[in-house]
Image (cartoon, rainbow, N blue to C red; front, side, top):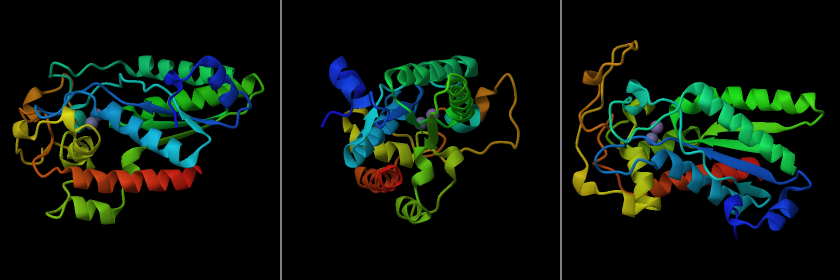
Length: 251
Ligand code: ZN
Ligand code: MN
């Protein structure tokens, strides 16, 4: 079943969304270094994969092309902007982009959207885009609904315990670590080279940010914790749970 909008012809697409009953999932990610062992796009490919799986399971949902560029990588959650490859946009650029995309889909007939976030820093820009899109549509007499989620919020304590049997260092340092690497090993093993994974202790940061950001705060490898214990099997556990819970929620 094709659930990806960009792979459809316009007439088929029009017939799917015209009556407003088909939900549209929009993955939003980032192009950001994730260590020497992984490509720049896990934050894009992971929410896109999850969105497609959920759409296939639930029916009545299509997946929009992902928005690949995300809000500025932050030192304490994504390693910051010191690394070649990390390619980010400002909050206003991301907000306007997502806002415009939602309203374009509204023109086609869609009324319900799910923003599936794959990059922590995007969160509040997406809140703003969703809030403004809903209000704008309302002013023209159209009721729309936007659901905003980050996929990792669907992962339970029990799964965390299975994935991190030696203890979980916390979400903040999961950038390029076991979680994302395991998922990528499952969905795109060709984009991961575990022989280049660097064993680094969980990054420790002071309880504040500083501008200009200080590159000395970030481990040389770019990951904020060690990816070396990542496996495709762990990736499957995480994905199975996220996809099952989201499918249940949106069925
Ligand atoms: Zn990431
Ligand atoms: Mn990220």
